[in-house]
Image (cartoon, rainbow, N blue to C red; front, side, top):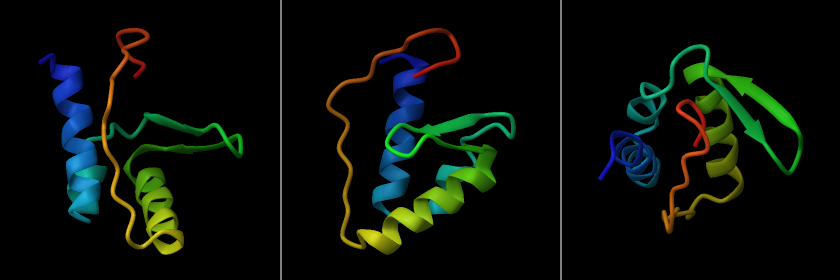
Length: 77
Protein backbone atom coordinates (compact mmCIF):
# COMPACT_ATOMS: atom_id res chain seq x y z
CA UNK A 1 0.00 0.00 0.00
CA UNK A 2 1.39 3.40 -0.96
CA UNK A 3 1.79 6.26 1.52
CA UNK A 4 -0.97 8.14 -0.27
CA UNK A 5 -3.38 5.22 -0.05
CA UNK A 6 -2.59 4.73 3.63
CA UNK A 7 -3.24 8.44 4.29
CA UNK A 8 -6.60 8.39 2.49
CA UNK A 9 -7.67 5.25 4.33
CA UNK A 10 -6.71 6.85 7.68
CA UNK A 11 -8.82 9.86 6.77
CA UNK A 12 -11.93 7.80 6.08
CA UNK A 13 -11.37 5.53 9.09
CA UNK A 14 -11.17 8.63 11.30
CA UNK A 15 -14.31 10.09 9.71
CA UNK A 16 -16.26 6.87 10.28
CA UNK A 17 -15.12 6.79 13.92
CA UNK A 18 -16.12 10.48 14.21
CA UNK A 19 -12.53 11.29 15.21
CA UNK A 20 -12.73 14.51 13.23
CA UNK A 21 -9.80 16.27 14.91
CA UNK A 22 -7.56 13.34 13.96
CA UNK A 23 -8.86 13.45 10.39
CA UNK A 24 -8.39 17.22 10.19
CA UNK A 25 -4.79 16.87 11.36
CA UNK A 26 -4.04 15.00 8.12
CA UNK A 27 -4.60 18.18 6.06
CA UNK A 28 -1.91 20.76 5.38
CA UNK A 29 -3.21 24.28 5.87
CA UNK A 30 -2.74 24.99 2.15
CA UNK A 31 -4.74 21.87 1.16
CA UNK A 32 -7.67 22.72 -1.10
CA UNK A 33 -10.89 20.76 -0.67
CA UNK A 34 -13.17 21.06 -3.70
CA UNK A 35 -16.79 19.98 -3.46
CA UNK A 36 -17.81 18.93 -6.96
CA UNK A 37 -21.56 19.10 -6.40
CA UNK A 38 -21.57 22.72 -5.20
CA UNK A 39 -18.32 24.12 -6.56
CA UNK A 40 -17.48 25.22 -3.02
CA UNK A 41 -13.84 25.33 -1.97
CA UNK A 42 -12.38 25.22 1.52
CA UNK A 43 -8.81 25.11 2.81
CA UNK A 44 -6.88 23.12 5.36
CA UNK A 45 -7.95 21.43 8.56
CA UNK A 46 -10.47 24.16 9.39
CA UNK A 47 -12.16 23.70 6.02
CA UNK A 48 -12.24 19.94 6.47
CA UNK A 49 -13.80 20.22 9.93
CA UNK A 50 -16.51 22.57 8.67
CA UNK A 51 -17.34 20.25 5.77
CA UNK A 52 -17.28 17.05 7.86
CA UNK A 53 -19.51 18.55 10.57
CA UNK A 54 -21.98 19.78 7.95
CA UNK A 55 -22.05 16.35 6.33
CA UNK A 56 -22.54 14.53 9.64
CA UNK A 57 -25.27 17.01 10.57
CA UNK A 58 -27.12 16.11 7.37
CA UNK A 59 -26.32 12.38 7.45
CA UNK A 60 -25.64 11.42 11.09
CA UNK A 61 -25.38 7.69 10.36
CA UNK A 62 -23.11 8.09 7.34
CA UNK A 63 -20.27 5.61 6.93
CA UNK A 64 -17.87 6.02 4.03
CA UNK A 65 -16.08 3.17 2.26
CA UNK A 66 -13.03 3.39 0.02
CA UNK A 67 -13.44 1.24 -3.07
CA UNK A 68 -10.55 2.58 -5.13
CA UNK A 69 -7.95 5.34 -4.85
CA UNK A 70 -6.56 7.00 -7.95
CA UNK A 71 -3.63 9.35 -7.54
CA UNK A 72 -3.86 11.96 -10.31
CA UNK A 73 -0.58 13.71 -9.53
CA UNK A 74 1.95 13.81 -6.67
CA UNK A 75 -0.33 16.25 -4.83
CA UNK A 76 -3.84 15.30 -6.00
CA UNK A 77 -5.97 12.33 -4.98
